Image (cartoon, rainbow, N blue to C red; front, side):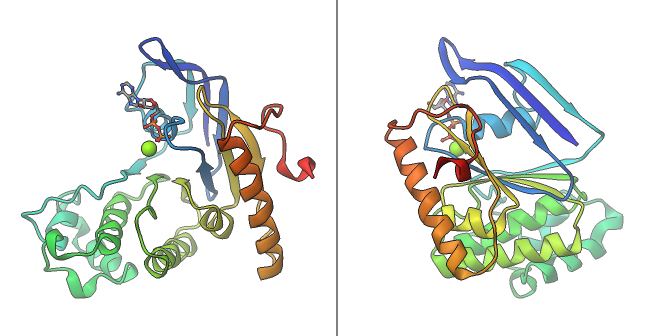
Amino acid sequence: MIELTVNRKAYGDAPVIGALSLTLDSGELVCLLGPSGCGKTTLLNILAGLDRDYSGALHSSHYRISYMFQEPRLLPWRTVRQNLALVADSQQQQKIDELLSLMDLGDVASQYPGRLSLGMARRVALARTLINDPDLILMDEPFVSLDPPTAASLGEVLERLRQMRPEVAILMVTHNIREALTLSDRILVLGNQPTEVICEYFPEQKDGAVEQAEEKKLLAFYQKMEADELVVPKARELTAMG
Ligand code: ADP
Ligand code: MG
């Protein structure tokens, strides 16, 4: 559905992304995990078509993209409902109600963003990304700075969304390995700059015990990689690492 090949992406002389290829099918939720500053946001901007200053190619069947930026970016002088209405046309008013209820936002529909917690504001931002029926949603660290219960409830909203619209592809940047294991179909671990995909991982999602073992394994791998102690062939599967 979407296929990106980057040969190189640099800001000035500083290379940020090395050789990297990434594909995403409809209905898939893929998490991008990588150290701070490795180029995750840069990669999302390229996928969104906002950044064309790179060597490589982006192929996609026709699709609508929605981008949930790291900051909710709501207009503070408009209510939650008005923020959603801003990106909807007049025939989509019913959809706003549907999304408010899907996201458990009914009670705050007439509140201003300044009154919302960060978790609530993120929900509104997520609701806004859904109004135009995207085929692909890009999410930049949607869970960062949320306390665990709030993050978990946003995770549940995401699961509900996937059940209701199983064809939507989601690419999500996260720092949280547990969240990545719980939510995603596939995890791509990005290395230090110039970044490449150094590991592709498919969470098992069987039971708690398996998940804990997986978390430990992935965490150890990730920490080693962050400390730059890891030299692995590109895109080698973690399970093969032992
Ligand atoms: P991440 O999202 O993984 O934390 P970014 O994609 O934001 O990383 O940034 C990757 C690197 O590129 C960082 O070193 C950052 O300082 C640099 N960078 C990001 N945007 C720009 C820009 N517009 N101009 C110059 N350097 C940038
Ligand atoms: Mg970023």
